[in-house]
Image 1: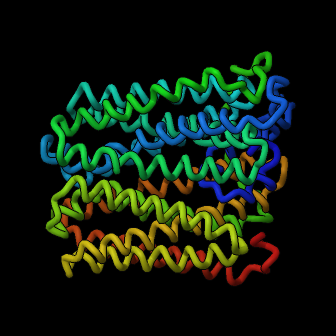
Image 2: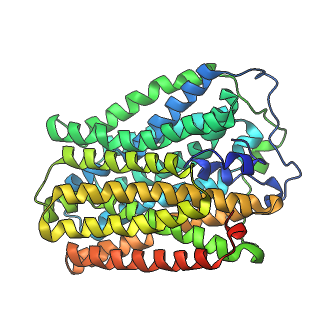
Length: 434
């Protein structure tokens, strides 16, 4: 996926379309260039290079989800209330948004390789913070660095893989697998290690850092974009936000879909320890890791399925599926059913994958060329608010009431918003939803 060609890129079922969108339109930020300067060093398909960059992408994303099964350990050691765990979790979104809004254009101006290497370094730094300290400020810093690394690598690696592969659709698919596969791999590594190995809050991060080392083979991969004179300064220009009046209704439907999807994923992954220990009597870090992996795997499958439908149909299917998944998760609590919880998580994860891919494609296709970066930046700000405000509010509710009450409240909130988005979609002309 390359900047300035988001309409074509949108055809790839790629969650990581998110990051590159923030640099998609340089004219939105005042640059005179409308496309990155392609390096003359890449003259043919470099599948091996694409695989190396995909590995880098996957292990950086895996590092961001390593803490997921470990939150219950931190909560017990530090006597943290659920609302504080959700704040720690939400700092990831702050890091992602900071990277996307401040550095989203950087890879188009100084090259893909420098940016992905910085992402690896930031990811390793976050892991070291988690490994070497064990207090609340360290959790804050570690999560912020994890978000920063994800924001740096997401769009850049997606573009890099697609350019190296030589086929935008297949390259986008490879990047999707790396992105979501990495997110699922993190807890799949840390959960069993925390359950069965010594140093449950040290060893998983050590493994994550070790997995980053082979990513340095990217040094041997040719860059696909040349460093432009003055590129570093120009690349640090913040991305502005805004939505043209002509597309506000379909934008609202897509943004709400992303918001509710991220709210579900954030709620479940931030508080999966509470769900298992308090709600389901299944206090197992390994179970938490496997369940989280299944949710992200379902999200990947949802994206692949969504590519076969129109964006309108996919949005409606996703908006219908997400509340049902959350309803199953809610039902698991009074019935003390782990199977129902996992089924709800998988169904909800699949719904998020379907809805989010369709939402990104719809917004990208409907945005004017000269404002696409601006519009997509606005879209992702709203999406990432979904894993901050509702999730923290739910954490406060759990702290002051019960897990069941908080889950019911979030389920109702999500269902209402999903219904609003569905009504907006059904009232729009078919052409207005791409």
